[in-house]
Amino acid sequence: MNNKKNSRFMPLMMALSVVVGILIGTFYANHFSGNRLSIINSSSNKLNNLLHIIDDQYVDTVNVNDLVEKAMPQILAELDPHSVYISAKDIQQANDDLRGSFSGVGIEFTIRQDTLRVQQIISNGPAERAGVIAGDKIVTVDDKPFTGKTLTNEEAMHRLKGPKDTKVKLGILRYGEKKLRHITVTRGEIPTKSVTATYMLDDETGYIRIKNFGENTYPELLIALAKLSQENFQNLCIDLRGNTGGYLQSAVQIANEFLPKNRLIVYTQGRKSPRQEYRSDGRGSYQQMPLVILIDEISASASEILAGAIQDNDRGTIIGRRSFGKGLVQQPIAFGDQSMIRLTIARYYSPSGRCIQKPYTAGENKDYEEDILARYEHGEFFSGDSIKHEGKEYHTKNGRPVYGGGGITPDIFVAEDTTNVTSYYKQASISGQIIMFAYSYTDGNRQKLSQMQSIDEMAAYLKHQNIVDKFATYADNNGLKRRNLMIQRSHKLLERYITSRIIYNIMKEEAWIQYLNSEDPAITETIRVMREGRAFPQNDKKQ
Image (cartoon, rainbow, N blue to C red; front, top):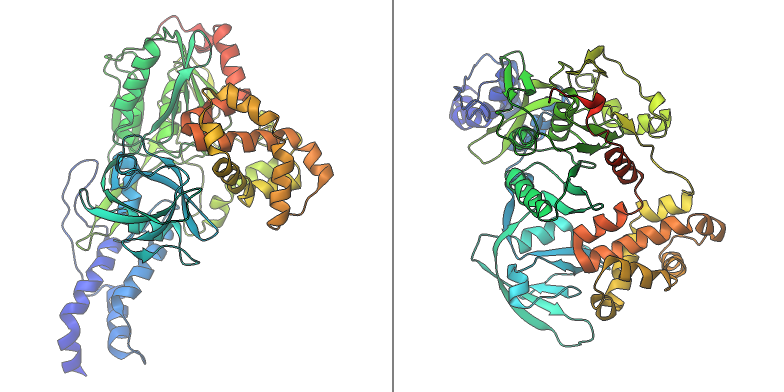
């Protein structure tokens, strides 16, 4: 047995070094400080020995590499909710959104009835240049079938993405045609925008929606501000609702645009990470502009850093609902096989000193993951008085009380509107039936809809097309039983949701956002705050 053990010792140790490295916290490529850490290997490590024994003596043959792959996420889950392992096959997708671009064909698609359908084309992207249009069905890729039950989003992205300048041959069925078209697309860099909407809410107030914080978010913001400057905006609303975060540096750069010199933006601190402060340099071009930040229960991480910096410095007004409460700093650490971990090394603290991270119990993530549902059931989405502050009281620069214990509590609470929400509406939304109907309707009326020049024109047209009744018939045929009384009660919500998706399909994301914002209570409150001159809390004259 000893001879067998010796012969297998070296390859086994190579596999186990990954796990050993995690447990003793010694890696390389510190993302924030640039430190390079040595990998320490201990032959006495218990986990190392356990896997060695399993490989040597277990009744059946064991793939140790697979065992390690499965063990790593479980080990990290015992630490906190945000330390994660990302396998080599998933690393590209994990980084694409934050990188600001990826290499592919440049389409937005949906899978319906086991067929990939082109929902939108990226302007001036590879697919558009090759002649692909919205509404096309892609049924073959490189002359191989591309339909059926095995077609998933992951499979589609795997087949359509690829290195820049490589070619992919698409077999396309176009609406009204029976013959298969073959179009060869040369893959290219496809930008992924962080700033997804920029327009004027009224004659004076500009609006910018930031979807996430990636590598290019700050320059995208500067472009958006320049665009609003051409329209002589005097006030600004930055919408971070639904923004789950991203890069710290992007949030710091944006906060810097609005803060006077030497204001603390955020600081980080951990057991092995000394306090590191991020401060404004006084070069921001919009230090005096009235500012509103919109947040909700999905706004997290970098979104909370920006909102917390503005709130704690009394620089603007935060409107919406309490943010998620993700204040743990992850350090990306890569391995030789291209996999990586994101290991929590510190916590974020807002300028007043409150920790952004909400409470959690190490190794017990269920309650943490269900926190949003618990808030909903507790009534926090409907009344600001229902917000439970578990941390102590802190104070902003002007002495206003703010609270720790997780997330950023807004200065002005806006309840979620559940008026006329029925179980039918919930099921229609959750099941994806509305999105699928909207695509089907768009596909059948694309020529007519594409001729419309404005959001108002399209909304007015759809209002007279009886789309709610058409949806109910469609949904009934696809398993969602018609409930006439509920449909009547939720008619306005259904009509608005369906209309918004059709607008999205034809006019793209900014038009979709603009339409939804037209009757949004948080936007209404933003405009009121601006008109009443309350975008600077307590009218801070020392700014």
